[in-house]
Length: 332
Image 1 (cartoon, helix red, strand yellow):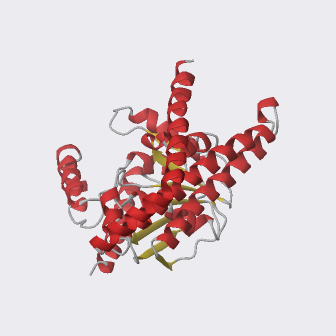
Image 2 (cartoon, one colour):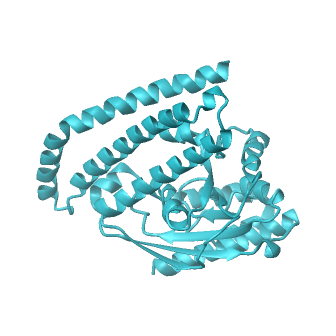
Image 3 (cartoon, one colour):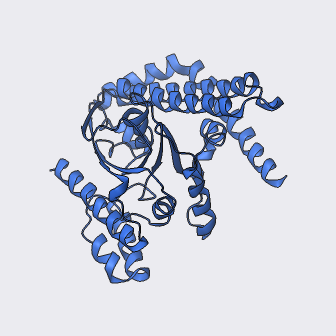
């Protein structure tokens, strides 16, 4: 009962808040855009303020569409009356893919972003995707890489703070996704939530996890190295100290997934080009406009993934070193 009250208490705040924000943005959009044009002409920042205002309007509109569609799915699937649960989940998966795809496609148009993909073509699952994390924007990138064209249905491992986005909260909790709490000390509880994603993976399915656990910055890298030196001994610290462009992988989630892996290949995804979209001030600076996003993926067959936990740790660090090397090569 308490959990139900917490969930719907949060949703009452977020749904009302986002709706009011959407109405306010739309009503004031002509005036806001006019002021943004003046600001951009003065700052000469490639109309970054105008683009940020448009992106905010698109984002809030996608939220409203997502919330409305989630209600319609609940009503017309008749799941509330014992309707087909599989159909209900499928419709919500489709809504999740539309939402992430629409946001990424809008960002591409508004900020004139180009996407270049190299490496292995990922056409089918089951897969476990280990992805670099640099900004809020790269949470939308998997939709373009794995879902939009290949039709893969991804199950995400995400931080619980994202539940304050009502679309992610409502739809994300209806389908297999894992929302984990960071820094609570409840490691076993988080692992159990992540491991539930492994059930029933098919050729259309994949799991996506950001092994770093947070966005990369040089300062976070130094903190991570200090933490490893204190708690994990010399072996992992020696491996991690060679990294320059990524954080060392946090092992709890990845190893929990690999422990129950029965047939899924691993896919590693390195990317550059979204480092200038970390904060709101970044978006207003104009640095993101015209960027080329380069993504490079490679697939490791299930048969080549070690079974022993220590060997998996070494293997994961070796693969992550390749991510680091590729990113460093792009930044030259």
